[in-house]
Image 1: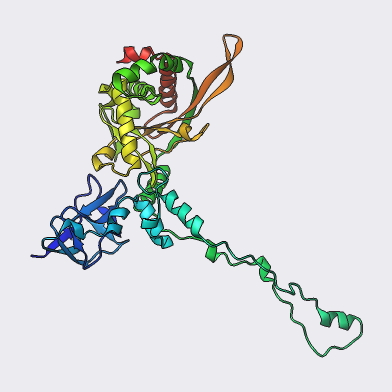
Image 2: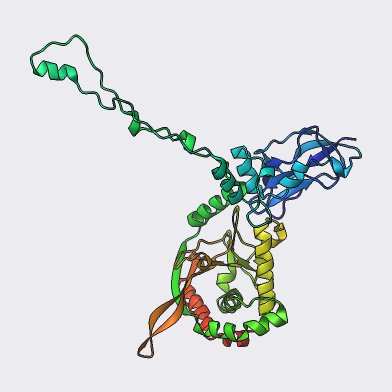
Length: 412
């Protein structure tokens, strides 16, 4: 009996998806569990696999089509298929990230010819470097032999002479080069479309404001330097700065609960749990996996969970559960060298903490000028429910805890 390939459940609050590249074409044999097509949602890319071995008889939703849960993607005729029927080219493409596949398709590149720069999955930059290495250099622009033609008729008339021909001035093509051959048009991924939409919506719907402060990181760095070796030996995890900021944020959220709230209609929903989103830069755009019950985690658990979520984000293997919810977000532009920025809210959250580059700067301390490792921190908030004084005190509380990390122990 012919089986329908249906759009599966996409997770909480997600009802639509965009059909990505089909890994199989109509008439191809497929093995049970083999990926047929990839669906792009605003949260993750979801692979749809064959429930049984057989032949893909038809595709009803082409690449780029918008589909909803339960829609038919294609038809499969069940039948025994040996695993060896899978073509080698498909096995190799499976090693490329979704965005690398799309770039390769747009550029007409055979992924079997592309190598990974780090020995793992083929990424977008691997494809772009392959294209650059095999692209013929552009032909030089050569000006026409006569770029500017003088008005001979006008000159002869001025001299009182007559002319038998009229010379028409020409527009020099040198000033209007054809750039179409040097442009690439690539369809924006579903995730990038959603990121763009949500960022614009956040600025249009929230009364967003940002307050700034700076943190002397000397005390935290001293603790980290003293404890990092023993910490790693015991927990097999690197003691970073993010766990300190997560702990400090939870303590500040407990002191100022409205920062851990959201707006639903005319209601303020205050959360008495602390699911902290950690922004991670992935190949297809920013994602924010969530640390569940962060207030119940110790430093080692926080560090290990952040590392695991970051790995999954960059390998594009985050589940919907990893991304759903979140009551407050921390984003660290400092890892990319940012000195100062204004983070944008992650709706429906009403607060986000932005961390930045640690830089040694001269400061005044007890009447003396000293050099200290300083970090600018930014707190963007929704002014509809958070007053400026509350946002300022929230950020000051984080500063106080980071400059006196022993106080984090007293906060639990």
